[in-house]
Amino acid sequence: MKNTTIFLTLLSLLAVACGNTDDAGGGDGGTQGGVDGGNGGTAIQCSAVGWCTTWEADSDSAVDAPALTGGALRDGIYRLEQGQGAEAMVIQGSSILFVEGQWSNSVGTWSVTGGRLAINLATYCDDYSEGDRSYAYAYAFAVRGEDLFTQEEGKASNPIQRWRRVAHLCEASASFKCRVRNCACVTTTNKSLHGQGTCS
Image 1 (cartoon, one colour):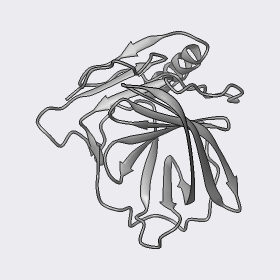
Image 2 (cartoon, rainbow, N blue to C red):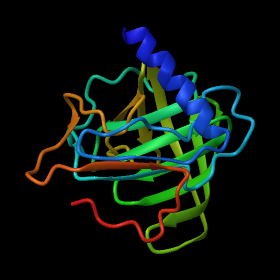
Image 3 (cartoon, rainbow, N blue to C red):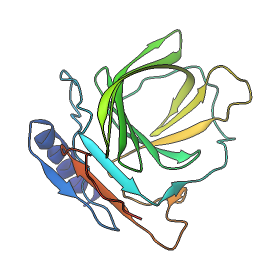
């Protein structure tokens, strides 16, 4: 049954990436689309995935991280499990989409050089506006199974964050879950973030 569910999820992701538009929302989440799990030949769009949630990651640093010596990143959705707030990264080919849990995205490209993850963001879109931006980040990183560990370079005191490759942004885990009374988690696929209402 689990294998069937994973297969159907992958089929839905491929269908959405080919141009279908779909909403998925509610307190228990819905199927997450907007990601091509194949060769990633097409650049991901800023509004491919929208997210609004009151859920949060475990705020503790990932103390059990392996040595940050690099690794192979696969296409997919990587949700923050240990760190601050609600964030996710969607990787598709050389494109990367940063998704924040309050209708706010940034899109750009990523590469790995010398075991370091380099991310260059070029545009943003949120519930108010969209436009160009230019930010560059560098991370030491490691991959262990479905987990991605990152540490932003620049300060030795920067915490190590743990991200997990997931099928659904609104799928609770032991480390990412609702910690408040007004629990809400809503996602959209290939839909403008402009004018989206609050989910809290």
